[in-house]
Each structure stands twice: as C-alpha cells, then as structure tokens.
Length: 186
Ligand SMILES: [Cu+2]
Ligand SMILES: [Zn+2]
Image (cartoon, rainbow, N blue to C red; front, side):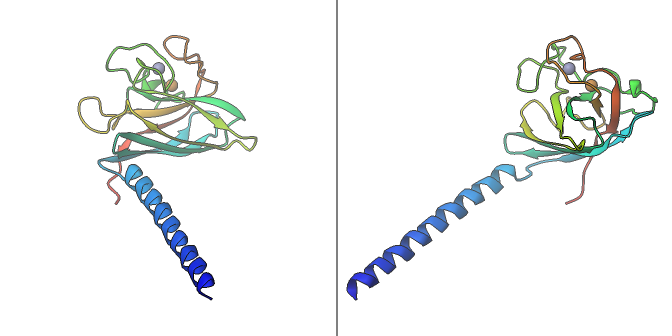
C-alpha cells in the first residue's frame, strides 16, 4: 500500500517536473522569437510572363531578424532570393529594383557568409508542386537605421544563386518582386 503510494507520488512528481521543463523550454522559444522591434513585409508579385507570387515577412527578434517567406507557382528546385536596392518593381522585368542591396560595398556571397551583400538571402527551395517555404534568422539585416531594408525590394530569381559569381550569383531573370513595407499590425 505504502509502496504503491510512493511510486505514485514519484510518478506524479516526475510528470510535473517534466511538464515544467517542457513548458520552460517552450517559454524560452517564445521569448527567442518574440518581436523586439519593427516588423516588415513584402507581397511578391510576378514579373511579366511569370506567375510566381508569395509573401515575405521580416520580424526583429532578440539577436537578429527572422525572415519567413511562402512562395508558390515556382518551378521545382532552388531559386535565388535577394533584397535589391530600390523599392521599385514597376519595370516588366523588375530591373527598376536595381542591384543587390549592398550599402557596405561587399562582395556577393551566401546568406551565412561574411562579408556579403546585406541583400544576399540565398535560395528558396520549391517542392514538386512549386511551393517554397523559407524561415531563418538573419544577423545582417536591420529594419531601422541607415541600412534599414524598409523601402527596398525582394526579388525571386529563375535560377539558383551559386553564392560565388559576381555580382549576382548568376541567378538569372527576376520572376517576382515586392517592395518591403513596415508592418504596423500588432
Ligand atoms: Cu536578386
Ligand atoms: Zn548579392
């Protein structure tokens, strides 16, 4: 009787303890991804003769900017994604968006490389249905100050960014474009 009771209380004890650990972990995660500053977004629209569209969001968190994008109607495989220097998608081929956003005059590279263009976000990967999902924390982006990305544009390319070819990663034509705007929604 006593033995059973003891086992039971140990059981409940560990359960409570485990739940506490798990909820603490989740609590920590929430804190880590909690917006701590400005947010921004861009609606991606297809350039002429393309049908690619999507949305990208930028959320300032504790140590960087979380970038989350959802893009559809791509050809399967990798496609370059960059922030370009002008918030102007008006040209049919989006050439009006200019080159990669690069206020520090660095070389073109991959998103995890330093130095790199601030705009070098790498590639999105589209599945066989043409859907791509991108979610990473970037430590070079900023939504405020002189190198803010607000008012710039996001471009999706037809080809994979090779992270090496200068100054564009040889990512080919621009297939979607969107202007980055501050998101004041709560
Ligand atoms: Cu680009
Ligand atoms: Zn670049």
